[in-house]
Image (tube, rainbow, N blue to C red; front, top):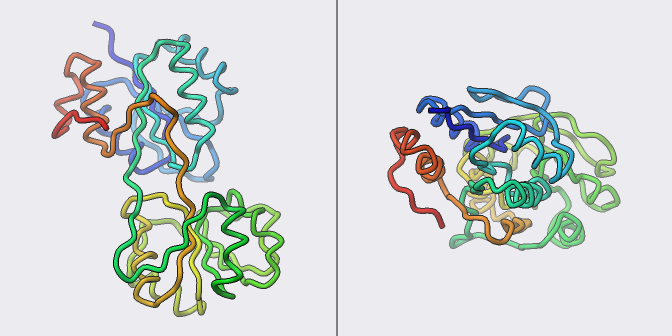
Length: 262
């Protein structure tokens, strides 16, 4: 029997964990990384770096490499590749699943200001504070380049490229982050407003708790929707079970607790 070939569009912790799970179950896994991080943590199995050349290029790649299933485990805000994947999977008749960690929800004490884009966030920030902790990553900083009345602490894994906010300092760091560490960042830099994306997950959530404790308002960018018609798994276990169902149960032994896909 030919080994099942699963393409994981990765770059997230969940994508790496899924590759580990499927690889351990004997599934051939290729993880595709965008290449935006200089020293990514590579998952097991085959790894490719860089784009496919749009939906058409991805569709050709799926056919040429005899891919049996695609799992989109990209960042919730990597919208372009998700829509390319949906088109490519449809034209190639390859099953597609989106693996998306659940988004964050406000709790008592939170002061959230939800917006639809980074540009809208840039318009809102000056009314909320003068020293902003910007945790949206190094992509999209141009949206804040013309904000003159706010100083920004920009946190990213790799040094950002211009245009950047006029008044800013870069803090190079990689999650997961701790609550004590986030408390110290807010205190040491005198932060009075936090700007972030609703990426979800536990690795970067402590900043929200730290902001809540300090009474710091949070500008949070809502995540874009998954392409219509694409099923969604909320956990690595659900995604592994979905892949296992397309491999005669081969990957189901990887420890998936159920195969419910929302």
